[in-house]
Structures are given as C-alpha cells and as structure tokens.
Image (tube, rainbow, N blue to C red):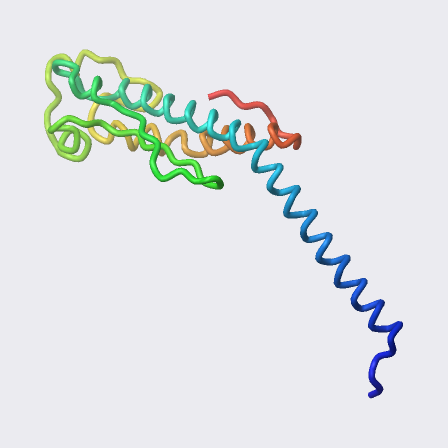
Length: 156
C-alpha cells in the first residue's frame, strides 16, 4: 500500500477538522439547552416537592400537629445537570409513625382519607409512589418546553 499523497492528507485533515468543529457545535448547543432548561426544571422540581409535602401532610397522622409542622423541603446535592429535593419530617416520632404499626389516635381517625389513601403509616411513601410517574412527566415537560421542544403542559 502506497503512502497517501499530500492531497489525500489534506482531505483527511480537513475531514477531521470538520468532525471536531461539529462536535464543538453540538457541545455548545447542549450547553445552551442545559442553560435554558435548568431554571424551568428547578421550578418544576420545587413544585413537585411542594405538592408531595402537601399530599403527605394530608395523610399524615395528627395529634398536636407537630409532625405535620415539621415537614420540610431540602435542596440536597444539586449540580448543573442534577436537581434533588428531599421531602422529610423532622420530629422524634416521624420514623415510627411512617414505618411502625400503631393504632391511630382520635384526631387522626377523624381526618378524612384522600386520593392518596387513608391517614396513617407510609404517609410520605404512598403519595410519592402514586404520583411518581406524573411528577417525572411534569418536570420532563417543563424542561422540554423551556428547550423549545414539543411537550404537553402538565398540571400537578
């Protein structure tokens, strides 16, 4: 096999330069999309977390209300490409009332059930599991719309 000619080398180099330029263009476009979608995705994630906190409070047991008042949304470990929110309850008895087996008190028994189920244990896990697909679609739709891509507007 003969060594490539100067013209053949020029064509190969030009082709590689074109590939590198295209890769850089794609990278810049992706960075712009992330910049455009980031704020919309953060807003959507904040709405999702607030919705989950409200739904979980609606099915959480109540005696004096300290469990429900301790509900919090925390930003945890978010990066440029990852948004995290943690919904939690911070009383001494939060884990027991979520995980344990117990009889509801008189105030909790009077609290009406919701579409997320009756008042009682797993008050945070149940609404999350019921609405996880909808929450995901809501955030994904907000990011798509921010990027100018077709996506249905979804309500929480």
